[in-house]
Structure formats: C-alpha cells, structure tokens
Length: 291
Length: 243
Image 1 (cartoon, rainbow over the protein chains, first blue to last red):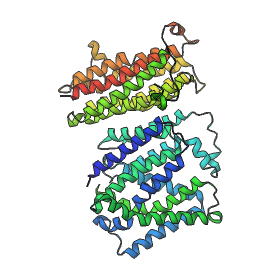
Image 2 (image 1 turned 180 degrees about the vertical axis):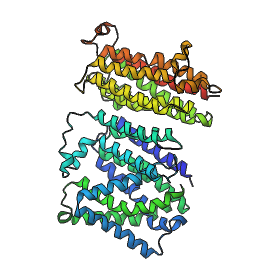
Image 3 (image 1 turned 30 degrees about the vertical axis):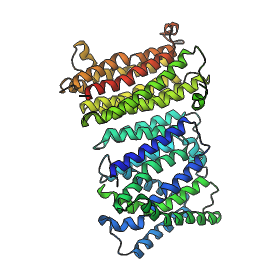
Image 4 (image 1 turned 120 degrees about the vertical axis):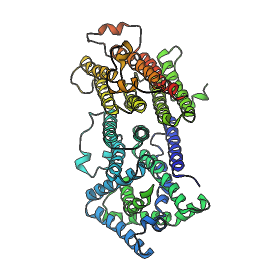
C-alpha cells in the first residue's frame, strides 16, 4: 500500500523520466499515436473503469440508491454528451473543455491545496489546457480544421515562444492571485509541464499529462481506496469496463459517418474521451473531496 | 566516442569554443540538478521547496542547453529562441527563491521578471518590428534595476535595504541574511553579465556599436552567465539550508 502523496510523486516522476527520454532521444512525433494509444489503454481508460465501485466505496459519494440507478445515470450522461456533439460540434467541444478544465484542475491541486476551492480547480485546469493548446497551436488549427472561426486565424507571424510566454504569464497571474497553500511547488510542477508541452507535439503532450499527471495518480488513489491485496488484483478489476469502453469507441466510429460528420481521427477521439469523461467527472468530484 | 554520440544529433567541431561552452553548460546544469536533488533529502523541512526549485532551475536549463548545443553543432546559428524558452521558465523560478526565503515580494518580482524577459526578447529577435534593440534593451534594463532595488542590492553599498524583499532579508534570522546577501551579489553582478551579452549580440547600428569589437561571443557570455547564476543561486540557498 502506498500513500496518496507517494502515489502522486511516483506517478509524476515516472512521467517526467518518460518525457525527458522522448526529448533526449529526439523521438519527435513519429510515435505519438502509439504513445497515446498505449497510455490511454494502460492508464487513461482504466482510471475511470472502477467508477462503478468507487461510487459506492467512498461514504461521501453515496448518492446512488442502487447499481441500477448508477448505471442508468452514467449511461444517460454518455448518450447526452454524444447527442450534444451531434447537435452542435462546437457546443460539444466547448462543454468538454469546460468540464475538463474543472476535472483536470481538481486532481492537479491535490497535494498543493484543498480541492474545496472550485474556482481554483477550474483555473488551474484551464491553465493546463491553455498551455497545451497554445504551445501546439499550429497543430491544433489543423485538428480543428472544421471549426473555421479558429482554424482560419492567421498566426503565421507569431513564433512558438510567444505562446509559451502568454501561457507562463497567465499561469503567474493565476498562482499569484489565488490563496494556495503550496504555491511555489505547484507553479514549479506546472513549469515542467509547460516545458514538455513546448517540446513535444500535441498528442504526446496530452498523453504525458493525461497519463502521468492525471490518470496514474488517480489510479493509485483508487487502489488505496479499494484496499485490494495487490495492485494486480485491483488492475484486473478495471479491465472489463476498459474493454467495454474500447468497444464503445469502435461502435461509435463505425456509425460515425452519418452522425458526427468528421473524418478527423483525433477530433473523433476527443468525442469518445469527452463522452467517457462527463459521468466520470461527477464520480471523481466526490472521490477527491477528502483528499 | 561515436558510441556516446548516439544520443546527440551532431558533433562539435575541434576548436569550437562556443559549442564547448554549450556542452559544459548542459553537463554542469545536469550535475547541479543531481546535487540539489540529493541535498533536498538532507536539509531542514522549511528549505525543501527552495532546494527543489534550485534543482528545477538547473534541470530545465540542462534540457535546453542540450538542445542549444545540438542546434549550434548543426550550424544553425545562435539559439536565441531556445535560450528565451529557458529563461521564460527559469527566471521566474529564480526570483521565487527570494519569496521562499522571505515570504514577501513574489508578485512584484514575478512581473518585473516577465517585463525584463519579454522586452529583452523583443529587442534581440526584432519580432515586433517596433522600436529597436536599444529601446527594448532600455526597458528590459529598467525592469532589471527595479528587481535589483527590490531585493536590496543597494544594501551591499550601505544605501538602505531597498524594497520589501531587501527589508525582509535584512531582518530575517539565522543564515537567511547571509544567503540573501549572496543572492543579492548574484543579481547585481551575475545578472549584469546578460546586458553585456545583449549589447554584443545587438550592437550593429546602435550607440553601443563598439561592443561588437569586444573579443567575446554573445553566446559565450550568456553561457557563462547562466552557469554562474543558475548553479550559484542554488548553491547560495543550499549554503543557508545545509545546517
């Protein structure tokens, strides 16, 4: 059994070593898809695959009367999210970003401040996503080619460093004007994340952040909460819903043509992730309440 | 040697002193990072954040010096953009050391450091197309002098404690005033190396055109300045923390 703090530190050090290896060995974006898929399948999706257990283990999160009500609401939220994407891709993306800001920020402040300050959670998450997007903004324009109001903006006269500067300045403002218990370590950790975002492509940047700063720490916290004898035993419990999520992704992809009208695979992956994320965010909000 | 070079994109040419200082910068920053991380476990709890920040500063610099060495060795010229990426990430962390020692002044120093870096980059890269290197350099210099005042560099000459940070350092207990004095020297003398590098690099057509005639290369000046300041800053904090 490892403590929450040990789990957080271990995950982030593993992520840092992994990132530095990518930078030093000059991997570039050749293997970004493989890195993304590997991290999503091994850590990313599994960390949300025990929601059905977590929702009933933590006394503070017992808001469901039965497993049936849990699954009904959970699946309804997934369908609701897909419905929004079909209705308006812009609204789908916008709501996904808002929810992600809160969710990522909430887990990021663990160890630095209480998660009670919801505005702080949101602002920290927004900073991370802002930096991820700004430091890879030219790539992002290609991914979001269907969102003309964004992809048509001419940014060719700006250098990458300009966007790094903006993201660092916004981070400074955020950290300075919030009351945070461990302000400097939080700023320092985010500086390292920004360094990784600057030097790697958008998919690798997201994979590293999502895998090692978000999913793996949460996975280890869930392991602690469930008090399993071994990590392997715990990990096996995540497999059924991980496999189900992958099947769900394939089904959505199969029926994609008439529904989502997007040929952009990365954008499609965003849609799948957002659908899985929406119900997960509510479960995690209760889960991290006392962390 | 070829076996060791598998990790590097290009090899330095014999006699390439500038390239050599990039290499030395990279390995010395890496060594300092390891040292600060090892010492992190040895120091008192209240200095742990300071030691971690010191390790981060040199760690981030080590990564960027690795990149800069590579760019230089490939004949792509002076790595201005990478250098500023490094500074954007590390200079705010350096001024944070003052805030960690004193508990005050973080806001002022943060903003002053941003102004100093942004205007310095505008002047050196010419990216804005507005103003010239001497105008941007002047603004950058003002921000630097403000920081020097704020952290109490005037106290070195017995001219008062300067701003809030300088006051807090002067009135602190234990080894903090001594560490603060070392940091003040770094800001006053160590950081003044950078304007010299800036003037050498942007001398063409400016009032300081004579700086181009100095037997120094801008990158060598910056590399020496970085090694002294980044490692020195951490060593100053470590000297206060080690007891």
